[in-house]
Amino acid sequence: MRRRSQGAAVAALNAFTADHSADARDGLGLVAPDQALQKLATAVDDDDLHVPRLFVLDSLVKLASRQGDLQAYGPELDKLLGGLARGAGVPQEDVAGAVATTRRALGSVSRLKRAGSTRRPWPVFAAQAAGALRLTKAETEKPLCNDAEVVLKGAREAAGVTVAFHTDATPGDLRHFCDPMGWHKRSAFQHEMKPWDGPGAVDIRRQNGWRRDLYETVELSPAKTLVTPLRFTYALQDEADPRWVHLDYVLLAETEDIAVDEGSLDVRLVTSGKHKGRTRVTAKKAILFTDPMLQDWTTVACDTFWTDTVIAAALGGAADEATPPISEGATMADAEADRDKLDKVIEKATKSAQESVATYAKLAQEAATRLGGDGPTDAGTWLQLTAKTYAQAAGDTAKAWTTCNEVLQILASQTGPPPPSDQSGSSPPS
Image (cartoon, rainbow, N blue to C red):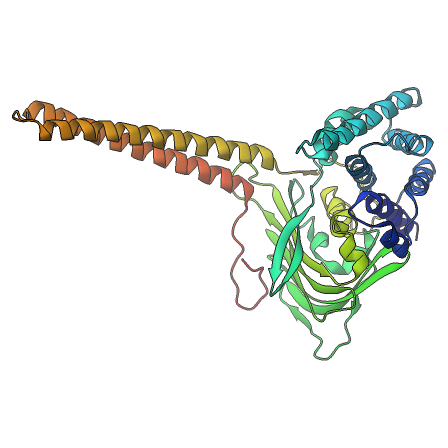
């Protein structure tokens, strides 16, 4: 119960500054931000925090990013930050300095919005607060939840939610992340799955996997619980030491709250590129709420149960632990660096192509001049011109091959091996 109460406090902070009306917040039974901060601060001080501290810090960064100013939150916020610093092993005499540094980091996040910056808030915060709060590598490179995509489902537009990161944990270590039967052991929002009792319910066991119809119960707030019938298909490549583990799910029947709910979780060994030997974790979801309160809270998945579940996986929580331990186990894929590399390669290729076009134009003009002149064409000059053209073509071909290889290497570093194909359904889809 304490874990659910603390999850509701985090949800309250996120809902307060999301695109969410005051009436809707009241309908969800969420407390005011200062009360939420006080509840979390008390839990930290009592060494009774049952959600990852990274989940709490994520909510503080969202609060700073969305509201733009945290001056109104004085004692409650300082108490929470002080407790988090002490919990990380910061000596008591250094706690005040750690709180001040973390406050400044949150202030930097607040200024991003006022300045109209497109920089991501978490990396800005983590770069300044990592030392003060003794953040681990897994925490500083927290998985980022993207809910800005629109997914068309027939004539309806669902929200697309995606998280992807790399970790040093093996796919076998993370099999619990893909197994919904154990989500309630780590989540502040998930209840234990129950069998769906509708007509034609499926419960099929396969070699290294199963397909099952279940009720998923997600407690978003004290006044809002979602009960959703879903068909889950769970598979892993090998029970003892899998190279991949996969889950997909689809809505069995619309509810009064949800019209679309489907997606997949995938953990997969990377066999090439800079992340070779590590594990890529990908979580994708398409969801459309019919409940007006949840439609009004456009970032609800990234603010609550989706990020909560992914953070637990990124930190490497054991199957029976409510709060995953602080560890170095997971690092976020350096997507920004890869995009920069790709941009530079494409820019170089574009410039090379433009130079080639100019060279060919010059050679063609020279050839036309010689062919169109009144005097006879000199064989030696014509041979020289032909050699120039051939050399240019050969050089351009080599450049194109090099560029192609560079692009393939960058893309290979972002993806693992393709999933195996199995018409039986026991293997993950492409």
